[in-house]
Length: 308
Image (cartoon, rainbow, N blue to C red; front, side):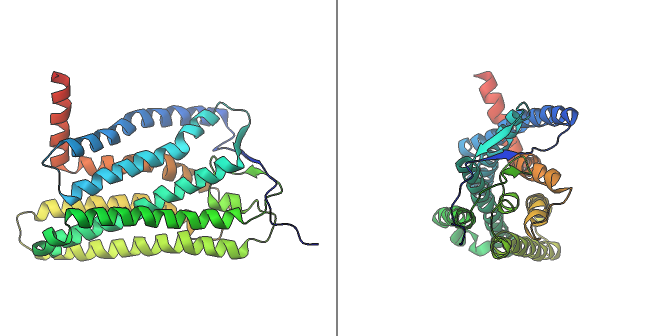
């Protein structure tokens, strides 16, 4: 008699980042300090871009959205992880696990597509400057923004639908500090080979293709910049270099996690920690530190509020 394709597990027990209490305390303190310092920085970036009339170019419009996505992304895993450090039994309900997984891939997929849009913006600005105002009009920017949110939703909902079709009847110990596709699939009470291939295609292959495509596009842009003799050459190189750094930070861990068969490696939790907690908060800050216009505007905003 075939096993019914239904979920009987109502909760998962998270094993956590580490079993060492000393390491847990160290990670908690470092994560909390990082969170308290960097998260307000991301919010400040958003407020600066929205309040300064001089930062209305598509470049800053997308940077503000990057800061918003990363700030939102940081709320999916980090707060619960910090609370779980003080819990003897780290329990997450089945529904909460699926919800966490959905938003993780929804915002993560949206950010990956946003980096593609930002690369397109830089390509038009540097290689086709005469067409920039036409191609990157305000309406076109909003259409691209809507498209990347829709793309992130489609990417994520595919993951969720595939997992919801799997039966979970035990065990329910999840070898991670949050819910993600590789660990959840391994707990299913059925053969998951086909589902794993679909997941690798949906997450891994698309991530790898986006990564290679972005590197190729920035290589083309940098070659074009090096051959040109324009006054903004150094600024263009600095901007593109920053984008490439963010691409490696964003896609490097994702490629490590999602482009291979779902077998556990000792480095998985460390890579996942940086990918879900540390790097998302750093991306906009890295970008801002290399952008003089945003830094200047940010200083003016801070001084104005101090004086008031």
